[in-house]
Image (cartoon, rainbow, N blue to C red; front, side, top):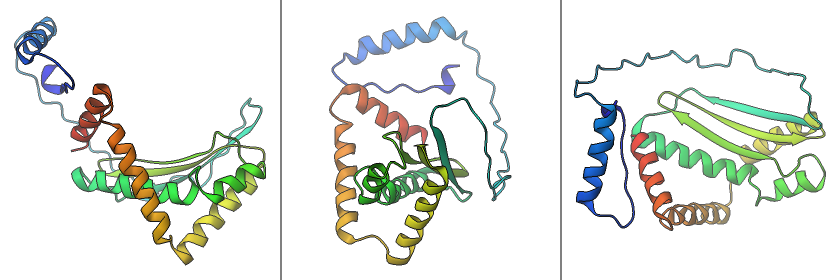
Length: 193
């Protein structure tokens, strides 16, 4: 239903022609009736994981290990966007491809180039996932835990934080290189509140 969608336009266009195009497309799928309110159920997400560990045997040539951290306090709106950015920077500083930590994992053959760390959040919950393909799941888990403990004790260096912030600024500016990227960035921010 048109009331449940949004449109972002970026680039060189004629606003009047675009409005006519949108009207013609919407009229093909919309009969003029007011949309019924869609009540999305609020799911009470438990604060703790239901199972601390899940292992599955799968037909793969290399094991895949993913370590997850649940974030039951994920905020809403602007605070959610800020949290995603902050946790993203922290994960990049902890485990990112440009870190000495990742280089050592890779050189020691503990991980392949498939390794990653990311954070996803929505209104009311969030989670971080770190891992990838590994020939030694136990060693990967041990090193990830040791790295987190190390940073908790010593913190991040101000220089490293400044470098990661510049990386984020550069990534943000790249959103404006193409109309598609600009539209996607605006749409993503709008949907996040």
